[in-house]
Length: 246
Image 1 (cartoon, one colour):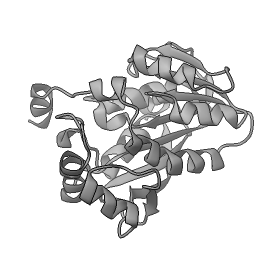
Image 2 (cartoon, rainbow, N blue to C red):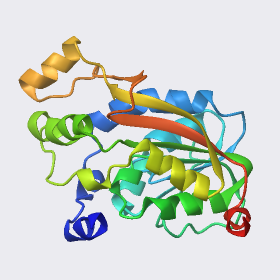
Image 3 (tube, one colour):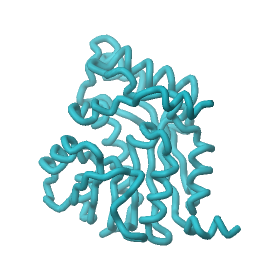
C-alpha cells in the first residue's frame, strides 16, 4: 500500500539542480568532518548523489581519490568548478546502476540521497557491489516519525525561502531498523548510528524563524536521538551472494 502511495507522488529534485543552498552547506560542515575523521589516509571513495560536490571536493582536499556521481549535469558542472584539487572524477550516472566494476572502492558515501529514492535498497545493493571487503558505507537520511515530519518537511516549508513543493516526501523517509535490515541483507554490518539535527536555542536558529534566512553561522549537531535525521557507517562483511546461500 505504501509503495503505491509513493508512486503517485512526484519527487521534486529540480531544487538540487539549480540551488546549492545554505541549508545543505550547513549540514555538510558537520557531516564531512565526521566522515573524514573515520577514514584512513589515501582511500578510493565514491560519493553517490554528490550534488554540487560539498563532500567529494572536501575529501579530495584531504588527499583521497574521489569519484562523484549524480543525475544532474548542472550540479556536476558546479562541483567541477569548485574542485580545488582538479582531481575528482565527476560522472553522470544513476545510483541504481553504478558504472563501476566490483570491489573498486574502499569507501562509499550516500548522503542527501536515500530519502529521495523510491527504492533505496537498490543503492545499497550497488554500494555493496562496488565496495571492497571490509570497505565502509557512510550514509545520512531521515527517520519516518512525527518529529521528522514537523522539522524536516513542515519546518522547511514554513521557514526556508524558495523551498519547492515535495522537496521531501514523508513516505520515503526511512526508519533506522528498516535501513539496518537493508544493509544486513546486502552484506553490511552497521557499526554506528548517530542522531543529526539543527542546533536550536541559538541566535542563528531564532534568526531563521524570524527572517526565513539561513545565516552563515546556522549549524547542526549530533544527537543521541534518532527521531529526526541520522548518520551511520556500515562495514562490508559479506557479499550478497553469501546471504543468498544461507
